[in-house]
Image (tube, rainbow, N blue to C red; front, side, top):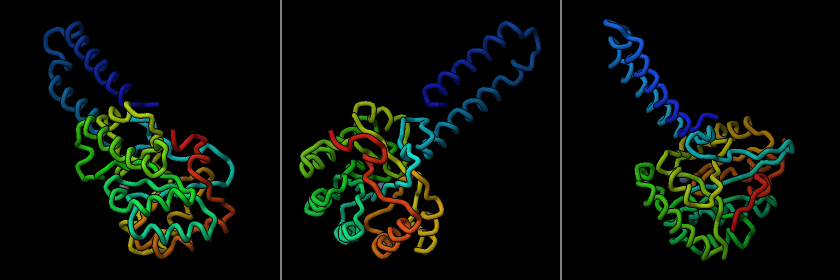
Length: 264
Ligand SMILES: [Zn+2]
């Protein structure tokens, strides 16, 4: 698998080989010498372009190992809800309970601080709580690794105060993983979890489009990402779960799907 570390190694090896060839093979006017500047610019642009682009495709595993689905042939999927808890989360819990479904809530520390009672409800009803940073800032991906790490640990402490156990699931804001976040994650025991089905429930106004998008991509081991507060989730979760069941799938806890533990 192509990883950032390997790609960086290849980047410097190619630069080294280019320079060795230029020094030892070029006599007088030579194409390697003539286009040396263009080569440096092009190769560096490729290196930076690939590294930045793949930060937005976490399931590539380029910057950090990530779980995006379960390794199973059984018709089992997991539901995940991001960015809560919020006042709207309680109604989702009622729907999940009525449908006998267990989900995972990737919460932010700042929301958890505001809606601690809701988080307790999530936990008491048997759902999993994962870490989704403290601030979920637009600028999070520009933070230094130390600041990212402190956001994670601050949120983890708050989750632990609710669950009495340390969370082991982490989801990066916006699903972006760059070298700084990878470095911060290297100091943690987290299993990084993204998704195989992105609902785009925050940006798609038509609930039928969201539902069709989700149902069309259902396959064994799928992980669906939704958000607590969206109109789609609030108004259509019940129907969505019914449709998932009618296709013969069952909804299982994320730790069971990934065959790993959600808490230390
Ligand atoms: Zn989020």
